[in-house]
Image (tube, rainbow, N blue to C red):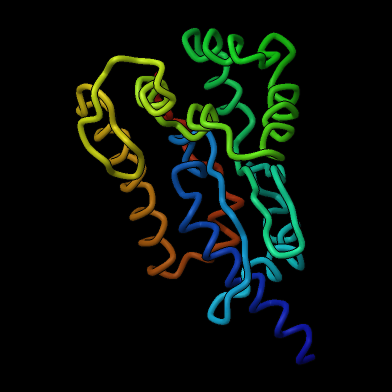
Length: 204
């Protein structure tokens, strides 16, 4: 019984942590979220993820793919397939990713295979497109545009910041919404398994 109780607590704690961190992806506003799991004295997240991650996401619309793994660290992409595919197939995104060698005409899984391969070296900057960062900011960060750096928030913003700040505000609103639901007593597992309105808007 103690072991079972501990596992339930592990599942609930990990589920709550995931809800807080992937909220915009849960709602469909953010195509994907990348999280890195490590263990600390306060939060043994890596151990919890490897032990209960599959159970936590069972029944959820959110899929996951491990992009890189070592003994002490795991970087994971969380996404909703339809939303991420829509992001990749957006005309400007498709052209951009194709120029970088991504097999956009072969579908989502083929693109993720290449993304995973590139993560074995270092974090490829083009992943920003999958994370819902506006294309102009991804291009700016990669040095592929003359737009000046205008401010720094969750990411570096280039050119007119209005569009980018609106995206950031939308993501933050999703986090507040999900944390409020949990504070009101909605179980994190229920949130993960709910079907949320797919109101993601193209930002590229």
